[in-house]
Image (cartoon, rainbow over the protein chains, first blue to last red):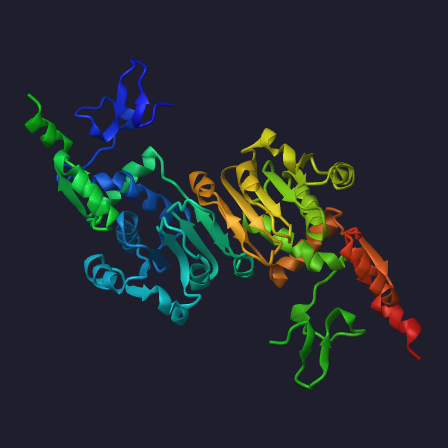
Length: 240
Length: 240
């Protein structure tokens, strides 16, 4: 298997992935974007977009009237809100930061916002939760937010194991699941769905020489929500 | 809500549940057994039986050709093996004790037996696992036994949270779920299914005065698989 980045091709060249100026691929592995969409706003669909889209569908959240919680409003979270809304769900953004409220309700169109510490007010109301948090965090409060048969889908991957309280899961016949991504057919379906429903990722286009600054801003949580490196134009201006 | 045991009825008498000599119930809450079945071998169906039956069905394990693991061969486990076999699944009993092998294969009809320490030989082969262990135990080895989309269903309820390794769950789009029991309609369906497929619980019928000895044997793990107290006959011989 040849991975996207830093593995060796059969001809012994190195795979640069998205840092390449050109890529040759079999047509079976090509995704078609409509001509009128912005590529920089759609690159994130190919990673975070398919992750949230595929799981919303696989776990039965992509239905009108479902009440879905979204934990964490970053690259994954801000797309999860938009896709869930486009599927007709009622969406509640769950966050530890009141500063995310306006963003969630006004910009992304979520139906409600829940500060983590206020969650006792709305126990057992959600059909499912998309949890995008990569840091270690307690999941019992999230399990309690869900109705019987609720499904907590983990998209973040904390390094250490999370604590799984069994009894609350067992009593409500609840599910804790994880999911990584979707396949090519579903990626094309997702890209078309996103174009139809005006779903785009919030990105910031940067030139290659801005990368170190971008890394510093990432570390401070100052990205809304992803940096996209303009490799083509950068190479055009720096190469002889 | 009036619970089965030790709660107070509207007339202020105490609920003795299964220790009662007579029980009055609305016909909607009555389960009908065929006349030719042994009641002592079927009492366990009403608790452990419905738990395994309901979850085998709910999680999609009740299909011909599925490969199901059963962890722990006690009251729940020995019924899980029988029901899964009756549904047409291939069943592997997973145990830390080689002493359970003959029981699993000869008596209960499992297709194979897996000593927990040998499990690296059969990684990623199971569609689902019914885990009946109530003690704290690692679930990563069980997650690794399952194919992509595998479902680990916890029926035991360890007191402390289990460690949930997120990345292995996420990569395989796996599910960790819990489940408590099924409803009355499904209990009747399960009892009828059990009668049709000759599924019975292994029980040991004891008189009331044997209870303390039975508790001592339970503590030593010396029950195969459940004691049933013969309340009716005990009361008949001890009452004036």
